[in-house]
Image (tube, rainbow, N blue to C red; front, side, top):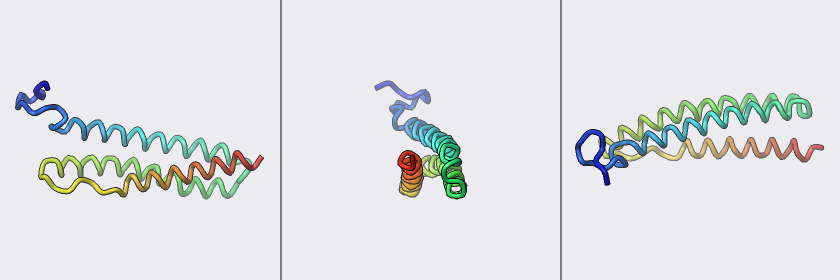
Length: 114
């Protein structure tokens, strides 16, 4: 193992680098969900009209909440790492799961509607 850039002899995985990578992954996921929600809404708008608008009203704010939650999760994990407190809970992954299921159902409706 190589020492961290701080010269403390602590491996990089133990000095917060993993938390930084995870935060970037959450941010990419949130941005991908936002883009997917926009594309899904556009794809089904002609066939489903008001239902597509309802999907957008739910999915787009949820994607933004995931984006904001990613930053909050990073700060919580960073503080927990320093103070040896409990790590972040599973609310953000659960929200992402709900949004992905909503996207999948929307797209399946589009595929099977003709």
